[in-house]
Length: 276
Ligand code: ADP
Ligand code: MG
View 1 (cartoon, helix red, strand yellow):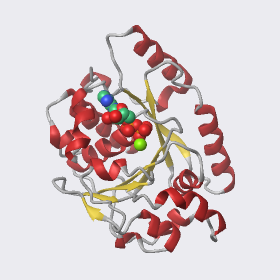
View 2 (tube, helix red, strand yellow):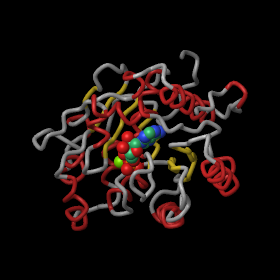
View 3 (tube, rainbow, N blue to C red):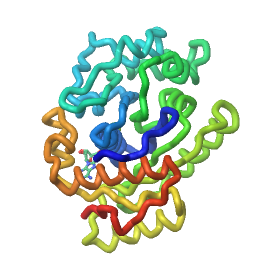
View 4 (cartoon, rainbow, N blue to C red):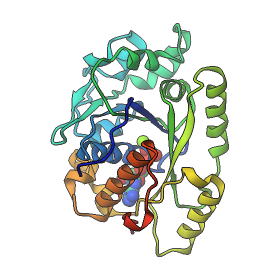
């Protein structure tokens, strides 16, 4: 609730992992809603042509709706496409429509093709505490635009076999973008998702991720929860769909941890909700 520190500058977090189905979209929308419920002003940018984040937030994104495609390819201002999310005060969404599937190719021939999202965000004048960008499961120009626009990378990792496989490529891209296009970029946050505390596998994967990444891994992990997977079909996040569920509480706790870390406050694990 109240009393969470708000960042001095807008924190732009890129939710990325080129594997599909690891919880990028789920994490983007539920973290964003949690941060908004904690009192922050939050914008979700849906950068996946599937538009799953838009759907999960109950945002209309049929083909005619002004969308992030118009911003990236047509140079429309972000303010023309941002919509308020129903039922969650302080939460906004720039939706993705199916046109975005073509953007990966169309961007290639455009001027400043890697920094079009960055420019659009810099020109956006509404005050925001957080921007969360939901990336597609690939490392093409859409994800590069997100990495150029953001300062922080948030990697959701599913607690499954091969959890770390493929991450090397994402980390190398982060280094490349940091070296050439955006010196601020760094992996700030790793979040373990779909954690099933009853299985040895999940705790082994969690241990492996913690020993590999250390301090970037949030103490809070997100449990596997049916309520989390049901919420999008009602156009809701789990925070409004079932506010008392373990999934909702764990995302609220992850949001609290992210806000405290951003303010340089040590997170006390004994007061944290550990999911499960
Ligand atoms: P990505 O965006 O990385 O492709 P999604 O967020 O769409 O991944 O998640 C993939 C699938 O897993 C979706 O059906 C989603 O509802 C489900 N899911 C994600 N997180 C959880 C969770 N904590 N518990 C149960 N199901 C989840
Ligand atoms: Mg997704």
